[in-house]
Image (tube, rainbow, N blue to C red):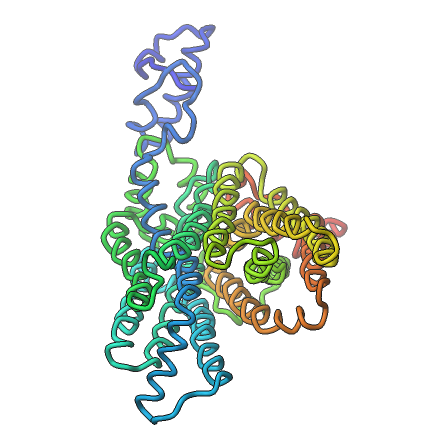
Amino acid sequence: MFCKTNVEKVRTADAGDQNRECVAGKAQQVRQHPRSRRIDVSGISPSSPKPMWEQLQIRYLLLTIFAACIGGTFQYGFNLTIINAPTTFIQSFINETWIERYGTTLESWVITLLWTFIVAGYSIGGLVGALIAGPMAVRFGRRNSLLLSNIFILIGALLMVLSRTATCFELIIVGRFFYGVNSGVGLNINPMYLGESAPKEIRGMVALSFAPFTAAGLVLGQTIGLREILGNEDLWPLLLASSAAPAIIQLMTLPWCPESPRYLLIDREDKNMCMKALRKLRGEINFNAEMDEMLEEQKALEGQRSKKLWDLFRDRSVQRQLIITFVLGSAMQLCGNDATYTYAVYIFNAAGIPKEKIQYATIGTGCCEFTTSLTSNLFIDRLGRRKLLIGGYSLMVGSGILFSISLTLQDKIRWMPYLSMACIFASILSFGIGPAGVTGVIPMEIFDQTARPAAYMINGSLLWINLTIVGMLFPFIVEGLGSFCYVPFFSISFLAALFIGFFLPETKGKTLLEISQEFHKCNFKTQLEQTETKL
C-alpha cells in the first residue's frame, strides 16, 4: 500500500495511524536500499496500487513486443503461407526454365520432386536456424540475434526477385532455405527475449505475444497471396520477396529496445546496463524485488557457463524439464494442426464452395487461430499455462472424433460436409487456445539462464523435424486410413493432455528462480529424502 506522505513525517508520526505506519515501512526500505530512495518515495498515495499495466512503461514494452515479433515469429507464419498461392506458377516456371536450357520438357513427377525441394528447403533451413539460435543468443544476446537473423531474410528476398530475371529456379530453393534459417532463429529467440524482459506478473502475456504475431503472419501471407493482390503470374516473385518488408521494419524499430535484462546481468555480468534496461522497460515501478531475484539467481549460477546442447543430456538437474520439452515440442506438430490446414481445401470443396472462392475460406482458418491465440494471450496469466494446454488438447480430441465421424458419413448424409467444416474450424480454434503459443513459453520458464538457449535448440529442432515428418507421412496416412486418417492425431492430443495433467507444474505467478528450485526438488527427490532421513 502506497502513501502520499513525505518520509520526513515518519519521525513525528503517531504509532496508531495506519498511514504513518505505511510510510514508516517505506522509510525503513529507503534506509536499507539507498539507491532506490527516489523510486520508493515518489508517487506514494494512500489508495490501492495501480494495475501492473498502468504502472509499466507501456510505450517501450509495447515497442519491444512489436519490434521483436514482427521480424521474429511473424516471419514464420508469413513464409509458411505465401508459398501456397504461386504453386502452379512456380511449377510452370521450372518447366519453362528447363525447356530454355535443354530443349525438353520435364515429366510431371520431376516437377513435383523439384517443388518438394522448394518446400523442404524451408524446413531444412528452419532446423539449421534452430540449431544456431542457441549459440547466437549466448554470444550476441537476444535482441542482437534477432537483428542479425534479418540478414538471412534479405539475402533470400534478393534471390527470389532475381530468380525469374536470371531464369534460375534454383535460386528459389536457396532463398527458401535462408527464409527457414531466419524463422528457426526467430521461433527460438523471440519468446526467450520477451519472457526474460517481462515482469513475473504478466510474463505469460508478454512472452505469449509471439503467438498472435505468428497467426497474423499466416493470415497476411494468405491475404497477399490472393490473385487480386500478388498471387498472380506477373507478381509472384514480388510475393516471395515481400518477406523483406517485416525485416526492414524490425531493423528500424528493434535497436530502440533494450537487451534482455537477465542476459545483461547473468550472462554479461553488467549490472549497470541491466538497471538501465529495467528502468526503460518498467518506468517508475519499484523493481528492487525483481533485481534482488535476478541477483539471487546470478549467485546460484555463479561459476557456471552457458550449457551446450549435449550438456543438457548429461545434466541430472534438467532431466524432468527435458522430458517435458520433448513431449510438448513433439505434440505441437504431431497433433495434426498442419494436417487440418491441408485437409481444409478438400473439405471446403466437398461442402460445395466454388474452387475460386476456397482461397477466401482458407483465410478464415487463419483468422480462427489468430483470434484464439490473441484470446489466450489475455488469459494466460489468469488461468495459467496448464489449463490452456490441457483445454486446447482436450478440445482437439473432441473435434478430432467428430471430424472422423463426419468424414465416414460424408457421402451418406447431405449436410455432413458442413459438420466437417465446423470440425476444422473447431480444431484450429482449439489449437490456438494453448498448444500454438504456450508450448513456446514453457522452455523459457522451466530452464534456468544457463540452460535456456540450449533448451530452445531442442524445442525448435523438434518442431521442424516433426513438421517435416507430418508433411511427408500425411498423404500415406490419408491413403491408408481413409476417413480415419485423423485418429493418430487426436490420439496424440489425448496423450499430451494426460501428460500435462500429471507432469507439468503450474508456473503462473512464480519467479524463474522459484520454478528452477521446484524442478531441482523433483529431479533430486530421492537424494533429498535420503538426506532428510539421515538427519
